[in-house]
Image (cartoon, rainbow, N blue to C red; front, top):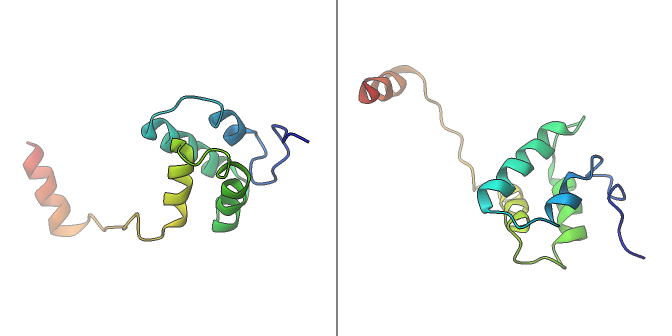
Length: 96
């Protein structure tokens, strides 16, 4: 039986369902991922991302959304940095 738009608990709005039916750039996929993540009541978590990958990844291994979901599981892909103090003031001077 084919999967329906609202069948996946991690995708209550069907956003990922629709995304996998589009021809997207990686930037578009990241924007959709961000919208999906902030739209979840409890927030995005590893379990939700895994659920989406399990549902869509096998049939769409080369889709940009699959790439973005894999990046979402990689805790080393985004390194938070603090931009306060001297470094922030320097960055502001460089723009002038």
